[in-house]
Amino acid sequence: MFELKEIRYKDILKIGHLRMEENKVSILTGESGSGKTTVLKLLNHLISPDEGKVFYKGKDIATLDPVQHRRNVIMLQQMPAIFPGTVKDNLVAGLVFSEKAVPDDRVLEEALHSVHLRKSLKTDAEGLSGGEQQRLALARVLLLDAEVYLLDEPSSALDDETADEVISSFLKKAKQKNRTVIIVTHSNQIADRYADVPVHLERYN
Ligand SMILES: Nc1ncnc2c1ncn2[C@@H]1O[C@H](COP(=O)(O)OP(=O)(O)OP(=O)(O)O)[C@@H](O)[C@H]1O
Image (cartoon, rainbow, N blue to C red):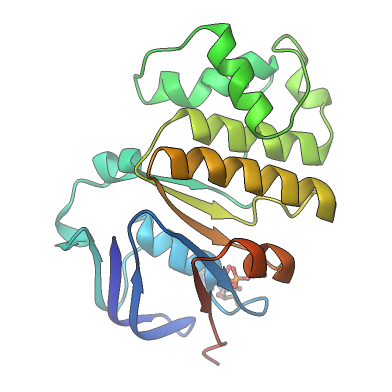
């Protein structure tokens, strides 16, 4: 799905060769500052390497339309934005932004269920706890139905047990639909349990 060749980005990242396979769960670990988020940004075409190339399905990312690319490859940022309004407003925000049809409430509730968030669609989103907001943001990207999900520390605000339930459930949904998932995490438990392909980054400097 992705191939990185002879990549250098500032004095942050140097990767000789890295492949991330289609329909697999790749999990990136490495100490703080080793460049995990930077890799996701390269894959999402938010930044471009100073040297080397990133390929998506065999095509150089630099030649692809970034907006279209980001519809196929969705990135959940480390501290996802929660907008003023209800849980439902937040769930549909991504769909509205990407000009996709808004499904009925039953589908939205199913997305909440997939991330183990037992709240009504009418709940005020800003009143949710940090961990609940994190799960809401995860449900929002799940609804976007991309080819690839790039998740930057999606369970950092959750206790181990909840993190395990949420990641397991998210990955089950993603696998049912043959999606590719790339997760950055500091949790060895998540990496050991769910990585089809573990990727460990070493600090460049
Ligand atoms: N745009 C930038 N300009 C300069 N330095 C940057 C930039 N983005 C990130 N860095 C630095 O690059 C290094 C790698 O950052 P990155 O966020 O990719 O690491 P990480 O492995 O995801 O870290 P963490 O586990 O702490 O989230 C850090 O030292 C960071 O301060």
